[in-house]
Image (cartoon, rainbow, N blue to C red; front, side):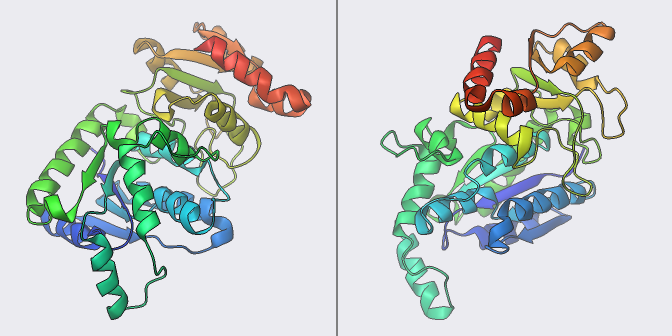
Amino acid sequence: MQGQIIVLDGPDAVGKTTLAKKIQEKVPNTRYMHLTYRWKDKIFDYHTGAIHLAAKWSKLSNVIIDRWWPSEACYATTYRRTSAWPLQGRFCDRVALKHGVIYVNCLPDQSTIERHKVMKEMRVEMYDDISKLCELYTDLYYGNPDHPDKGNYIDQVILSGGMQHIPYCLPYTIEKWGAHLDQFVDLLMHVGKTHREYQWKSALDPDDQNILGHKHFAHRLFVGEIINPKYKGVFWPFYEYNNSSLYLTQALHNLWLNERDCAFTNVKNKDGKVDLRYVEEARENDIDIIAMGNVASDIMQKNGIEPDFEMKHPSYYKRFLNGEGFKEIEKDIEEAL
C-alpha cells in the first residue's frame, strides 16, 4: 500500500512542529514538507505542486505536509480579508480524497495565545495578534452557525458543522495530547490505514491520475471527455482554477454539494485512449454516473454502460449560455442528484 500523507494545519503555537517530529520518530520512513506564504500570486500552483510531490513521495514513504490549503484560507480570511482562490479547498480536497490524505486539525487551547507571546520574544513572528485566527481555526473544525458566508469553501465547511464530521480529520491540542503523543500517532496511523483501505487501490497510485475523489464517500461520478493539462505531469480530471474545471466547481459550490460526495474522471486518459475503469467501478459500487457531454455519453454507451444522467459538458454552459450558464448547469446537476 502507498505511504500515508498527513496534513498538519493550524495557527502558530499549537504544536505542529513537535507533533511532526514525533510522527517521524515513531513512524519509520516519513518525509517532511513545510509550506509557507510564498509565491503569493501563485498560491494555488504552489499548493498543487506540493500535493503532487507528496503523492510521488508516498510511493516509497509516508509524508507530512506542514500547512496546506487550510492555512491559505484561514490566514487570508483573517489578515487579507479573503483569498484570491476562495474555492481552492474544494480542488485540493478532491486530490486529498484520491490519495487517502489524513488531516490533523491542530487547534488552539487555553494556553495558545500565551505560548505565542513567548515565541514572539524568541524569534520573529509574521503576525502579532493571532486571536482572531485561533477563533477561525476553531470554527473550521467545530463549525459555527453564525459564521458569515463570503463565498469561500471554508465558509460552507464551517456553516455545515465543521470538519469534526469528517472521519479522516482528527483534532489535536497540546492540552489533550501533548503528554500522550505516542498514543495520538498510533490513532492517526490507524485512521489513515482504514481510510486508504476503503479507497480504490489504483486511485492511491500517484501514476494513476484519471480519478479524483474516494470510493467510500462518493455518491456520484462526474464523467468528462479528456484532460486539458495545465501543469507538467499533472493529469487530474477537473483540476484547474480556470475554464471548465472552475465553472463546474463554482456550480457545485453554489449548490452546496459536499465535495466528499463527488468523484471525477474522464472517458479518455491523458494519451487519448478510452479509459472506463472508474466508470465501471462506479457502476459496481452503486455510484451514480453523470455523463457530461456527448463524447462521454457516446463512448460509455458504445461500451455497454448507460449513464444515470446526461448533461452538457461544463464548457457548453460557459461558452454558449452567457449569463444563464450557471442557472442552467445548476438546474441540470440538481436533476441528476
